[in-house]
Length: 252
Ligand code: G3P
Ligand code: CA
Image 1 (cartoon, rainbow, N blue to C red):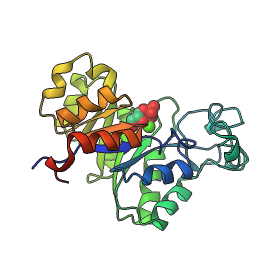
Image 2: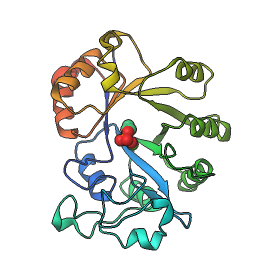
Image 3: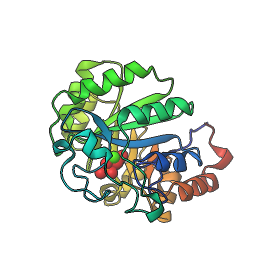
Image 4: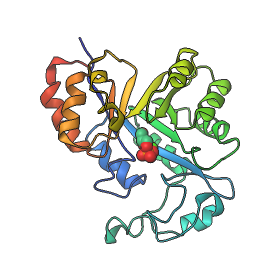
């Protein structure tokens, strides 16, 4: 029996709550997605924080790069108002706070953890993340992902057993070569590229998850092809469409 295509909540359920914040993760979990996706950067004083952009400008009332702000400065920011005025008290979570949240709710799905080293260099961040995870002894599964192939290589050297995915716009020969060498386990590819190569939707590619799938048309295509996973902002819509297409015919 085939397995369902995983639904992965992108930065939580960012359509209804400020992305990468605890309310967004809570909102996503109401739909029981297979995975929560989130992003990690590091502050000037060395704290790991959960935020997507290199800068705080888009999602807070502050300005500047995360790498140039202290944790106290990050914590003083309003990370909710940009989404809804009543969410003005929402803060950027630290990685520790996020992991504590998962522990407190007995999270038992998969965490898709993106290390945001594609534009800013954070020397040693891979080891810091692994050490933090180890200190929490999570019972849930974790997949580490990054656009930065050097980060993936460093992760694999640090731990031969962690699950790793390469984030790519297009799975180039170099990407497949690194995968064959065992540097990573999965490929997470941009749907915009896949749509230009429609035959790929029909290949039995058990390693491929696709981002970011938000339209009903794209969702139907991915679910009908039975790809391994779909990273989406539209968690409720994906849940409904998967039930319709894969329903009881595909067991977990
Ligand atoms: O998980 C895939 C996706 O999150 C990668 O793009 O920019 O949203 O982190 P981005
Ligand atoms: Ca991400």
